[in-house]
Length: 195
Image (cartoon, rainbow, N blue to C red):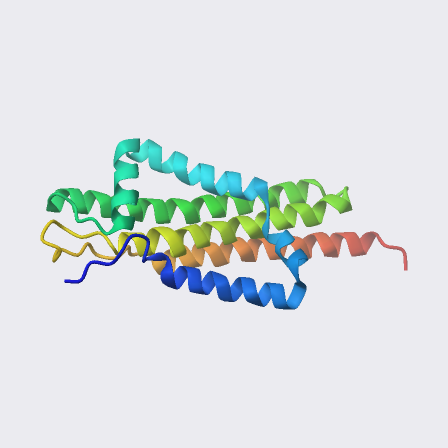
């Protein structure tokens, strides 16, 4: 069994992020990154994921699971390896769940601000970037990290987190509801225009 170096799980994720960033930069320049910077969505998704993890597990266990799995350090025994895998799988599920919650929050705020047309794009941006952040945190950080969890003999491999399809469906459903709400708002606004 070959041990991989610390943070080597980020290799494919970093390559994917570089390709996406290069595409955005090529098409839009530096200003193309501005729509992806949404502090509200980042705080809701990142803070909510940390909150969900800290309610379910002690902070020491979370820190140990993340740092040791990232470094490729094997667990002390099979129970510890299973616990690390459980923590990381819970993190993946929580990230997508918080992205979905933030998306619904953005849709609710967007529908509530139908009178103020200038606030609709900002609320839509919250809705879309929130699910984006949730999916990225889940699928590019927690899932690859959970696949690195090993037992003390380096042979025990914790099953990869299931529910990948479920997480994707949550993401697509949240994004779809946001887009549908936008169409409803646009229809309502178009009905108010004089012809």
